[in-house]
Length: 149
Image (cartoon, rainbow, N blue to C red; front, side, top):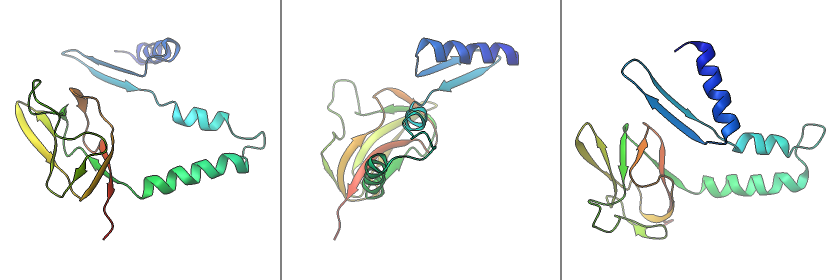
């Protein structure tokens, strides 16, 4: 694939509103993912290029909250599964308490099913990946609010 073809593909994705595209052939593998978070923040900046005081407070609060959470990340590339099989309930749901070693999900890589366990004791705040989705190495999977002892 030529550089111009890749640029045309990126332009098409931008215009179409798609968030993510994954194309794989024998010759090439392309994964494009858009993030709207940065453009929205840039667009909301004041005319002098600095955020207004009313914009700074929520950003600081959000960062402070995120700093209190532990992010459990994928240790490998593979497919994310929330439950041991399609007929069974998910290992965990948002709001569930977990202890260190609690099974959170399975990541299938090359027909090997790897159980991912919690690294901390706390509560699942958010599941960041949809069931049966591809995940990358070091991709955030769960936000856990650790128990402070």
